[in-house]
Length: 215
Image (cartoon, rainbow, N blue to C red; front, side):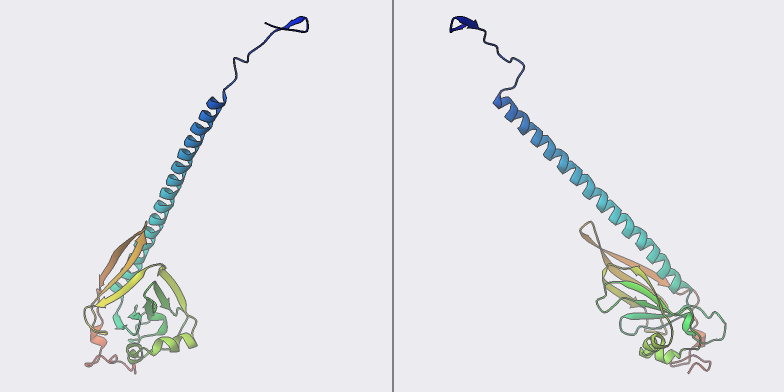
């Protein structure tokens, strides 16, 4: 007891409180746990984002492989490879033995070879000389006259290469290769396809035109 001014004042102690050192230790432990939880959450989020990105690219790759393979396998003729394009006579829909604009499909890879896109003219009439397709002048003429349709197959890729077994219009097989970045790694893919029914019997001997009044 402490005696002061003629009376006794009891001294009490808070036995349920924390010392400064205990509080500091608790704060340090909390900070470490919070940092660990934040790191784990970031890692899980990054992994999910990477997984979603790869899933999206794989789905896109499967669709692109199917579209390109079906286009080449079922086409009548590889008409030319002017510049950064591959021109394909998709089919003779009206059985007239001529290449009509709506039957022509361009597989584009761009000047930077960084995408793969299909270009066609679904509502176009008239006909296109094979010599103009081979010479590379048909595409711009068609774009000026008709409404084109563009379908992007692989929007973000690099080093796109189109390899033919023989120069058009004698080509019988096509190989399309390109690089994709997946989870930070660059991977190369290749799509190979061969024509099932080559319309070589419609070509003149020098391959410059069709045996019909194409030119």
